[in-house]
Amino acid sequence: MTLPTSPAKPSTWPIAIGAESLAAAQFARCGFDVMMQVGRDKPWYDFAVSRAGNMLKVSVKASDDGRWNLAQGFGRRSSEPGTRTLDCRSAIDLWADSQGSKTICCLVQFEDVAITQMPRIYLAYPAEIAAEMRLANERSACCGLVEQYEYTSAEGKREFASLPAKWRFSLERIQELIDGQTASLISGSFPKPTVAMVAAATKARPVALTA
Image (tube, rainbow, N blue to C red; front, side, top):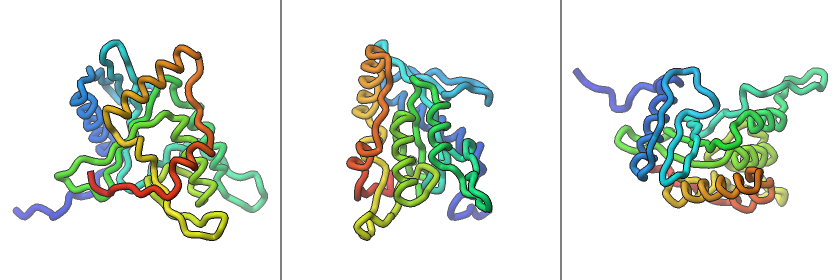
């Protein structure tokens, strides 16, 4: 029997299960206790991790095409006569509001990842992701979270943008999120980055295509 040179493209459900398991394994490698939830009827997060009294609730978002259509199910059509344009900004706002205030998102990307490689993994607050999606929508009319994309600047120049490098899965990023959550618990409010903050962080920043 001859095996195919590349695996057949799986459906969305197996991809999501695989991403969740890989993300949990990465947190375990970093010394966290991982508490998985069983079954498909879960609340707004997939598993929780804890270490030294700190806990994070993690919502895993999987993709194999370079983008995460997080707000797609929250879209509303434009009210303008004769149009079927999605109201992307409202969809993004509704998605962000639906996320648990103490939850972080773990973005797992399988695009162009060989079977012998780890997928690219990012960690971010829902508010950070919403700000990134709003920025991409302003630049390229995209209504989702895109790992990397091209756009035309106000000066007419061709620019390149990608997800913030600091979002890449690492011990430093996990600690940053824990520290941010601790500060938010003390102040009673969770961070809400502005579009300007995201724009400054993402302008012309390349992203590696290998794990």
